[in-house]
Length: 198
Image (cartoon, rainbow, N blue to C red):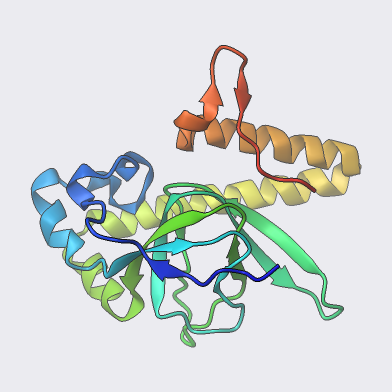
């Protein structure tokens, strides 16, 4: 099956001041009066089809992204060619941003479902972070949350078997979807829309 290309979302694109996921995203703490100014740093919204790769491990992506809608997988490839997923990205997650001197990313990111991302040129991000002092603190908070989650997965994976590790992952995703994709949660049946097949 041929994978469709990534394309620019048609106008009108979502305005930052009217963003339904802002409370989950990097710009959570930006005052409403500053959002129009902040939006000048966003280049486009892109539609990423299922299985399309947003950026490749070892590359220097032109953008960092806020995942606006959909599911994405962040993964690395071993020397044997096996793909190891280390995180599932959900709406509000900030992806593709690394602060090392090379600018290269240590992982690939691909879409599981059709996804929409807000793209911020990486060469302008430092200016944005310096101009809005609450953003670096928010970024540190989001990175700490993700690091804590990774540590839990590592510790749990070492002390438990495969079934327990999968159960932990499913519970984590269930909890995150209830927070980050409320329209995918049914409170009557206490169930979620779950696109993963393996």
